[in-house]
Image (tube, rainbow, N blue to C red):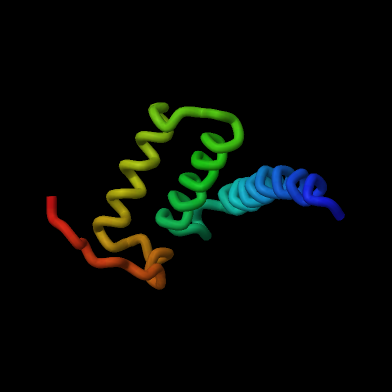
Length: 96
């Protein structure tokens, strides 16, 4: 396999991996709301919106995107986003 083949595979892999991730998120997002907690729903929704920005060139300035960011940020700030429980956090090196 030549360098050109590897570059072609790399160019092909990332969009396909993103599409697969988006399809999984969409499928999970379709679960009945009574079985899915709001933070999980919001996390999946943000993932789908980010994939649409990445794959379809949508802007992060749409009303839908802004609303999703506000709702998700409120959950994170209030400590309800348990999905982030094991994500390492850094220290703020400089206050602005």
